Image 1: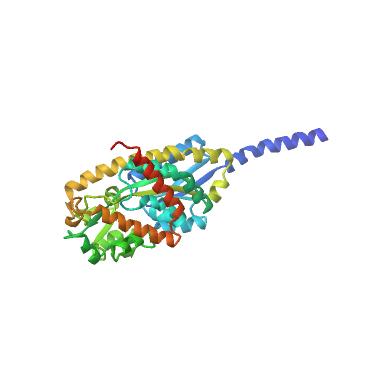
Image 2: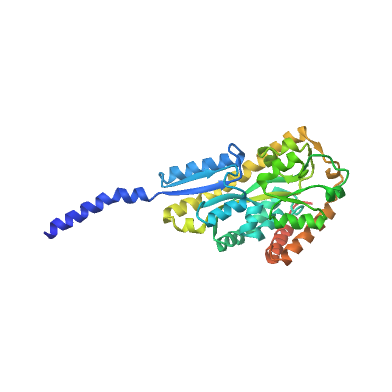
Length: 339
């Protein structure tokens, strides 16, 4: 009798094994503003296929591209409610999770991508810890390109920007501080309403990257572009801690290990294609007279950026300690470069 019961239990256990494996499947619902076919979505699609292949179908990614899940604050809200588990975010979204990381977007702080890479590597552990403390796992760092001014009409001087209808991403405290330091009064809109705003005249000037301007079709409305970029836009690929913690150890390891190569590809592809987009737009657009490199007072703009950073430190949006680490790393790097 005991032997029969033992055999019966073994048979039931074996019958249950396929069911256990079938249930051991996880879907990462992932949102991004990046349009289908864009540089970023091509990298994400390849990443999703890699995860599915290496996990033998146990970890798949369902993408929601092109802003169909709403603006970045909407995406983060849906992640909190469990409707999404991950997202690719620009600086605005990064600031909703861990604002101090936005020091890397400070206008006129960096002179080259090499400087950005060195400084970011120095503070990356702090950024990783900051995301984790706010219930997100940072999988990959990314960029959205070099930020320029784009406008529907030319400028006689920088001072004229005070009378322009400059778009500001709704709720973006970082750019708000920069605009305030310059005495500019922006028009706050969700990013999903920028194209309509340019079409109706609600706004006439935007800050964007060449790659994003083309991908989001803003370039068709803004025939004037500044020669001088003012910063490199940051971004991040994140998943919720809840989703990450719910994965088996092997899938956690797979997801986490996929981050470094994804980051490397995203940054390299974005820098390459942003430069190509800049060359395309340089032929198709006209320079903003007041924003040409030879008339832009970099010393003055750097001082205004410092003023904005100080204001954000006072409000605890940025971290004075992390900002000093950035300054120190930048000073060390520059001191080692040939004169």
